[in-house]
Image 1 (cartoon, rainbow, N blue to C red):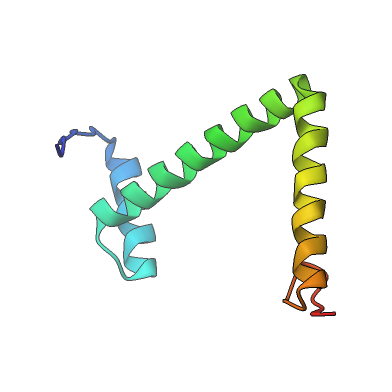
Image 2 (tube, one colour; image 1 turned 120 degrees about the vertical axis):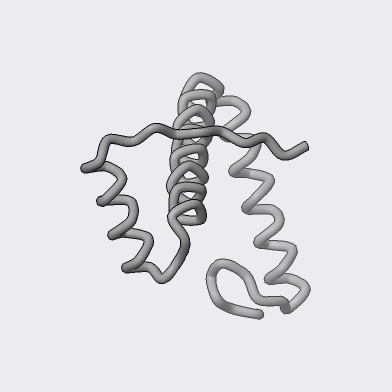
Length: 86
């Protein structure tokens, strides 16, 4: 279900949002949504980084799994992170 949230901005903040949105050729609502999405992603990534630092065993297992996947791609002759298909 879609939820509507009302933001109250100072005149200065409103004009700044309007200016940024116009510069990107988008609506103010779409610009604010983009900023909120970026902030949400930043927070999620920070939380994930904190979790990974606190879980070195899991991090090592994930890195080993990723390397095995890359090796499987190389073996199959498919493109991989090294940019090779050999």
